[in-house]
Length: 552
Image 1: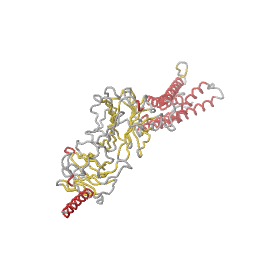
Image 2 (image 1 turned 180 degrees about the horizontal axis):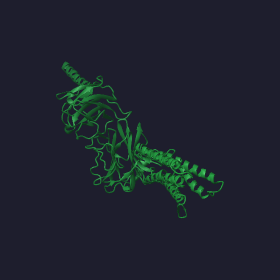
Image 3 (image 1 turned 45 degrees about the vertical axis):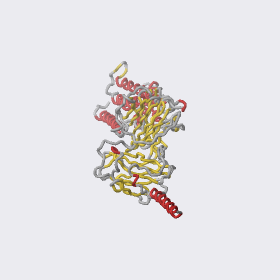
Image 4 (image 1 turned 45 degrees about the horizontal axis):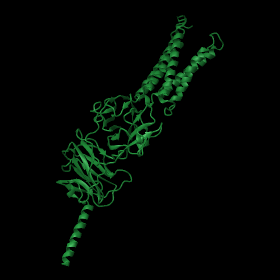
């Protein structure tokens, strides 16, 4: 009897250790279908601290895609076991698709799921890991889109099952969205809930703009579904909250802000920042012209993100009234800003282009509307036009009248003065007026001095001073027969020429400013051509006066 009990005990122990060995050595073929490890515990419901990235998201038959399973954030927990498969997106419950090749056989091995050899990858031991890679090969008749799915085990009782990973699409196929991974922190002001991550059914679309949601787009009427270079912000009211979608091509981040004016500062900001293989979505504040400060309170929920071909997309929901957290009330009207730029290690840099700014204020929770916007403020456009007309057209023409028509029209008069003098004076007075008006516009727009415009404003101030000095000097010019007349002529000529040269230099620097949004390098070449044309015209008149006119 005792011998029988001992035999039974040894049999049970052998079965127990054999079962543990089968799990730790990754021989989990029996889990290929549902991808559930036989641990006797429920999987974790919250999002895992791991994710999958691909080296490309489009493929043809026989193509290879490198897939990396790793901890999502530096410092996150390691993992011990995993199971990786690929399914057709149109049949996620079907069998595995394609086959894998190992990158490091010491930590990973191939499994045969169904009749497909090498159709899954698992671990070889229970050693701690932070990253594992494999190469997936598309079959001869690949589906229109595929999705990577994984189960990962942190420890025996802590594991996550069938986590949706990236989606890749067949070249030329329209099915399948880009890689969207949701991290539904779902924190509200009253409670906190979490849901498992999921792949969004479709990428952002402009289809409902103006009918079911408000949209801000650049270029005008672009659609982020079909145009990768589209900057896109949409929002729609759902009960007591607003759902936001933000998309755009960016190296590090895309963001938008709610502002009471068209000048950045003291704004309610929302950031989607690339940090390695993830996108961090945060609310932030901007106090004056300072770096955004990320809010300590989590005001966002149902957050989701995507990265594909240099395009960052993110979405989230926030309550309409979060005044208790210091956020703007969405029942009020604001100007909308959309900006993007570089980021390093999750830290953003100054935006690389002038922000896209809505033309009018908008009540965020109000009726759907297709909004108009511009990256170039109207006041700055007028500033550029006034200065360009004044110093590239009027001044040159006025100088030509004074220098070359003085002797051609010696007796002709207009309103009691010689015609050349009246034309010269009228053009120069108009130049001074346009310069004064144009000079004040940037200060009105900026609300003060700009520290980010380089040497352009300093040159502009010098031109403004010389432009004012010229007519004052002309008022006190001595009579034609005075001995001081030559001194006046040289001072008047010198100040005018110096002003014209500095003005041209300031204009060349001005067209590079973000706020004007002029096409480079064409704007520089066009301006250079205009300057060359002015110099050539002056040379032609000079040669004509010296060679073709009778002396005296």
